[in-house]
Length: 230
Length: 278
Image 1 (cartoon, rainbow over the protein chains, first blue to last red):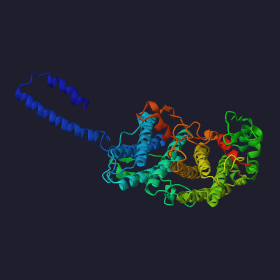
Image 2 (cartoon, rainbow over the protein chains, first blue to last red):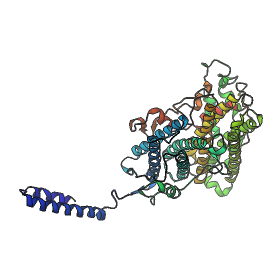
Image 3 (cartoon, chains in turn purple, orange):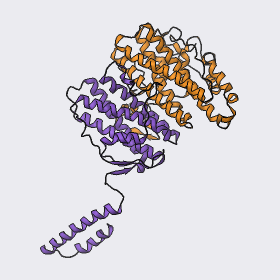
Image 4 (cartoon, rainbow over the protein chains, first blue to last red):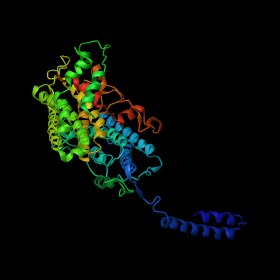
């Protein structure tokens, strides 16, 4: 790419008549086409829709960052166009969740620094943002998934400081999950229902592979988690 | 973590609630303070368990007895809190104090706390340890509360217990990092306690006792009595992993405070629990 650019001044230095301008344009277009093709071949995957979370604790932090990106994008979309009949309580809760998830997302981006994965492209085509049932059902799925993701990732973290950080966030996700579940079925046992809490009184715990298989429905970008600790 | 050293630290701790006015608000200083209260309140079972751990460990796991003893100590600490919660909800759900619309919620919480007691006892035994016995609890804290008669009191203590439980498990995670299975299980209990906390907080608001949300804003205890402030101190933190989060996001500081729950140390947790231990 650099070589092509370095040639350009020489070409541009020539007087350009109408004819030669056309010829030059054609050459430039051809060169551009080659360059794009060259990028695809030479580089692994810049902007090609795939990101590698990385390894070690950084990989786990990127994994969390990916999930927080998904959650933040979801609640931003929810509050950008609230479903009809959204109650004041629902708006307050969903608005709070939006703020919390943005805070989590921005925190991870800053904490991971230059090793942070780029912004992911989400796919919410399966969600009907005009439907209360669809929005709250998705919120419930995302929050339960977040809880199980952090619970399952704890043992993969080597640094106790990062483990504590994960602990600080997962309990907030669990608070969210309970509130959303209670909106869907008020006053019931569903806030910590038997579908997520087992007979030992333990909440869910999922591996990154299990979590990403579920989250993948909502993320266009291909996520490579193959280097995460296991 | 060694419970005996905790005992020593507790003996040095000074509690000063002299600014509190009413009897209800002065429950933390009722009749006893400092070493007398804390020594009397620490469950004898914990001391006994710590004293026998190392000697009682089978020779086969002697090489890991130090690590194992730490894990067992943490589990016995957690078990003590679960005894408190399970007995509280067992008494609460049979007292008739709970409004009909909230019974399903508290039956579920009761079930989980009893499950946690059984699970922790079983896990401690599997690790070669001895589960501590339950302390004897006084949920009136010397007459300051009447939780099995007055619903507002019942909900207030439930919130304080659940929010404390979340912080207690969070504070111990690092001490379990050597044991993947126990760490994961502790995290799985931790998030269940957080679900409980969120629900109880919102029930208090639904019933007009408070305006609290499912999450903790700043270090606010809402309308809970002043002595419960220890349950919320430190929750206003906005610096995470060395990053002052207020400087790297457009989100306001109140929401940032809500977005991160904070831990408590074992000493801080026992100081709270001791109020309800005879």
